[in-house]
Length: 262
Image 1 (tube, rainbow, N blue to C red):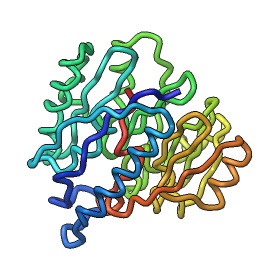
Image 2: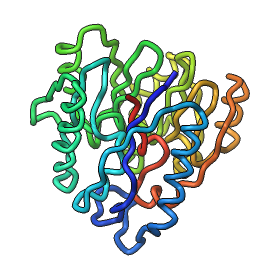
Image 3: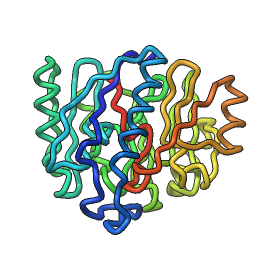
Image 4: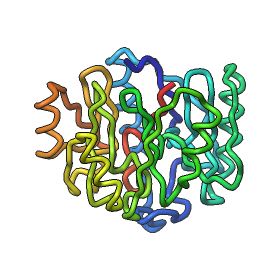
């Protein structure tokens, strides 16, 4: 069960640029509302006995709030992201410094391999699912397999620019189960996910960032739930906690984007 997460207060969170289909600089963030939503999320984590660690917000890095994109954590190793867009690339050193100061081994990917951390790398049971196609490249799987022994990696090709990170259209659930939106993936990946026995969910859920969820024990924390998610949770005997994430969705983020599991 998750015991600790890393988050960043949304002190400087804004739509300062446009690097995904959701972002529009004319549709600005209500900072007070964003703080309320973020604080409600942290309160719920604490109620679920999860310790929340914080990284200091940075005036020049409005997307630092999306800590899931920091990198990949496996045991005591941290592999920092190589962000695709220049606007987010300075976040990399901030996260490296934070993890170094806490004794993590730093495993850096070659600069030629773009990779956006837990946005595209999700552990599910004994497997690591790696999304590629928009922000991360397929070669990340080969690098991680070579340098981190014991990883069972499954690569998933993303095909819809609205679902540019894996965590927008795929989510692990307890017991090695997972949900996914088929039309977010290429043909071969859809076949793979079907063979693995995933639960299909709706486009409506993903558009409202309901698939961008986390689970703590038997509780699913999300920003939106519809019939497709409720049916899965009923089958797996999971509770759902819905929290508003309206301001973060403006930037293409939700509950999981704001959360890095430590």
